[in-house]
Image 1 (cartoon, rainbow, N blue to C red):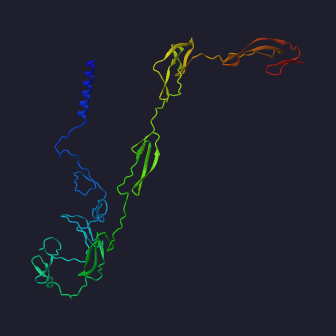
Image 2 (image 1 turned 90 degrees about the vertical axis):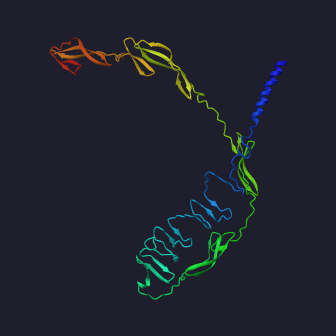
Image 3 (image 1 turned 135 degrees about the horizontal axis):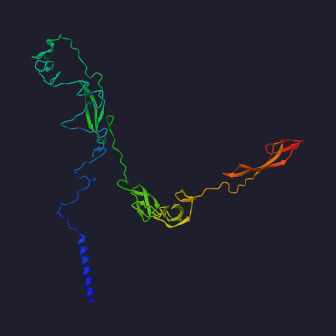
Length: 400
C-alpha cells in the first residue's frame, strides 16, 4: 500500500514541476532590450517608422488647409528645396503667365538685375545685352567689345510708359495668409499681409468655426455577441451605441451568427439496386448469369465479377444470337407456312370438242399459296353433236 502511495506522489510531483516550468518564460535580454516595436498611435510624441507608409492624403497637423495629395492637387504655405523640377511653372493667380524652360514663356513684366543674354549662357557672346550702370547706357556685345546701343541705332523719343496701367491689385489668399490693401508700383503689386487663424477665403480671413462637442468622438459601435444574440449595425448618438439585434439559431461568434451545421446527406437513401440477370452466348448456346449491384453516391453500380452462371437454352442446330450486351436468344428459322392451308382447285375446259376436268395443285411457299402442278384430268361430258363452250378460264359446258 505504501509503495502505491509513493508512486502516485512521484507522478504528481513530475506533473507539477513540468507545469511550473511551462507557465512562465523569462526575458531573453536585459531591459530595455528585447521590447516589441511600438505601434503608430495618436499621441503627440515623436515616432519613427522605418518601412514604407502608404496614405491617400496627408494634412498639416496645425492647419488642415495645408495638405499633400500625391495623386491630385496639394497646398503648401511655402516650399524650400535645392532642386525643384517641372515641365512648366504657372502663376498661382493667373495661369496666363507661365515659365516653360524648354519652350516659350509669358510674363507681365521682366526685371533683370544681371545680364540679358540672347543665344547662349556666355555673357561675352555676340548678341548679349546688358545695362551699364556706370555709363547709364544699354549696351550690346558685338563679338569684340561692349558698345552702347545708342551709337548703333538712331535715337527715338522717350515715351513714358505707365507700367501699372490695367494692373489690379485685388486682395487674395495664399494658404491661410491674407494679402490686402494692394498698390501698384513699376507694374508690380505690393500688399499688406495677415495670417488668418482659421483660414482665408477670397482675400478675407475666415471667422472662428463653431466647434460642437462630439460626444461620439472615439466611440466605436462594433458588432458583438451576447449569448446567442447578435448585436450589429451599431450607431452612436449622444455618446451611446444603439444596435439592431438578431437571435442566432446556431449561436453567435465575434458579432456574426454561426452557420448551420453541415448534415451529411445519404444519397443512397431509398435507392434500390436489385441484381440484374443477363443472358449471353457461350459455346453456341444461351447462358444466364447474375450481375450483383449496389448503391454508391446515389447511383447503382456493379460489384466486380458475377454469380450463378448456368445454361438456359440449347440452340442445337440453330445459331445463338446476342441482341444486346444483356440479352441473347437461339436464332431458330421461322416457318412462315406454319398453319397456312392451301386448297387445290378443280377446273373444266374444252378438249377435242368435249368437256374435260383437271385438278390444279397448290402448296405454301414463304407463307403464300402458289400453283405447283396439275393432276387427275379426265373426260366429264361428251358433247356429241353439240359444241363445247368455255364460259371462263375455269369452266366449260356443252351447248346444242
